[in-house]
Amino acid sequence: MPYNPYDPEKSDFIPVLSPVAAAITGLIFIFFTYQIVGGLITLALFGFDLENAPVNGFRFMTSLGQFLFILAPALLLSHLVYRNITDIIRIKLPGWKEIAVFVAGMLIIIPLMQELVTVQNYIIDVIIKSVPVLESVKAVFDELSKTLEGTYLKLISADNLFELSWVVFIIAFTPAICEEVLFRGFIQKSFEFRMKPLWAAVITSIFFGMYHFNPFGLFALILLSFYIGFSAYKSDSIFIPMILHFLNNFITVSVFYALGDTELLDPTAVPEGEILYSVINVVLLSVLFIFFLYIVNKNYHKIKGGNDDMSEV
Image 1 (cartoon, rainbow, N blue to C red):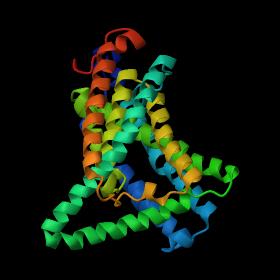
Image 2 (cartoon, helix red, strand yellow):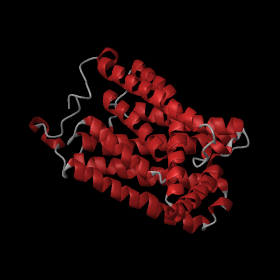
Image 3 (spheres, helix red, strand yellow):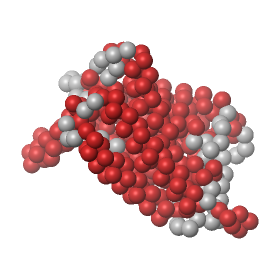
């Protein structure tokens, strides 16, 4: 069962804000610090032409910005609101069986995300063609996507294994630590105090997807985030979400380094003639994914010990 901040025998844990208010306040505050303050600092240092900025300097600021403007505020808010960083952030070592189960689930979620992106963007194209007035809106998002892709390519490209290790630190390790402490720690745990954990994970995932400013990969991000949120609640450990987040980003970096395939980073590319194949894959993988979640949820006590069902809260 999740730790109860309202336990009268633990009055030192009573929050100074409503948990939902704390979560929303945290999202707004950290959005401002990271996206606005961090963005202004980046522009002051490198100017508007980020694609021609010194790559290592840009990478360093990207990583430093996450530690300063995501991780640090999340820890500070956990202390100020709840006076208990350890339980809010879920700082507890998981068992190796727990880790193995959720890592195995990534074998389903990663291909499902890829097919979901294809189907989502095919549907967007169909809607745009049937409603011409939306063409201008799509054009704006296309330009945004190209800008983000160019910046991301700058961060992810590596010429040797030493540089690749630096890229892995920036793209995989840093967000796995900082974003998970915020979203699966402070935000989702706050929501869990006021609603069922299923809805806490869903709402947190929607915010997570929106936070990344990637409309063409929105549903895939929400799906991944929900799975990570599910793992956070079941294990009550922040380390499993960190591992899953790291693995997802590490695979992207590694495949790009090995193949140099820019289509992996282009969420607007919808292969013609393959949409039916993608739809079938989405349906089959979704059924498999739901079945996997059901089995894990019902049998988690055999892995972790005790009785912890996501439907009971």
